[in-house]
Image (cartoon, rainbow, N blue to C red; front, side, top):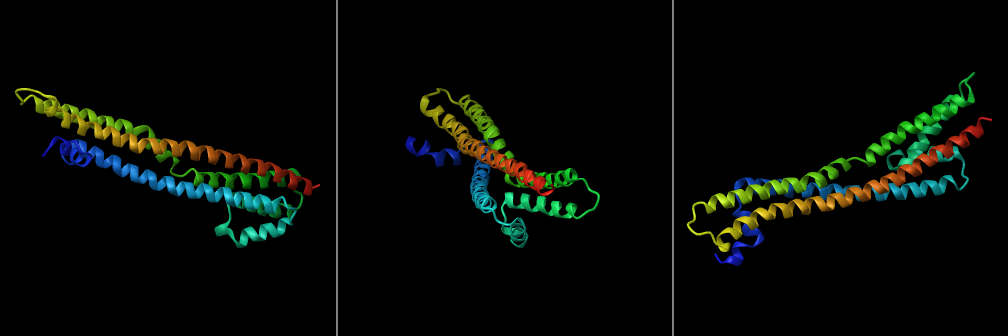
Length: 225
């Protein structure tokens, strides 16, 4: 086997020590999982943004609230997060409004609490798996570094049995150890970038939902007068 073959990525992985191979396999598996969650989260955030824009356009077009509510109830499985927040608030408002001897402020507060509870559930769903991406981004380089350190230790232990140490004898062992760090960075960098991007997009959606809840509460308060 010539030097070029010895230093190819595949050969380095195949001839690495068992511990380094386990580290590499772990990092490759984590990388595949992070890419799966990245694509899944990308579609989820994109869909949430699209449905939010559609509902905002329908809501502020001046349509009847009862028609919007009936549409949200009938199409609940395909409704967006903001539409579910509206449904929860308007449902509670309608239920409390029909009760006698109930202060108007309590009616609006009850509607706001219902919207807040639904808002929290929707945000939990949007933020699902973000913690995993954050963990991959922060931990993967250290796991790769562990594999590198272990591989270098293994390479130097092998040199103790060699009478004369040359670059040709030490290079493959160090190179296969450094592959672990490279795989760790390959897993970490996309996860960090995706986490920052999705966190930003979800925060913007959360701000839009909270603004809608306040504006809708003001509308309900005016209806109680």
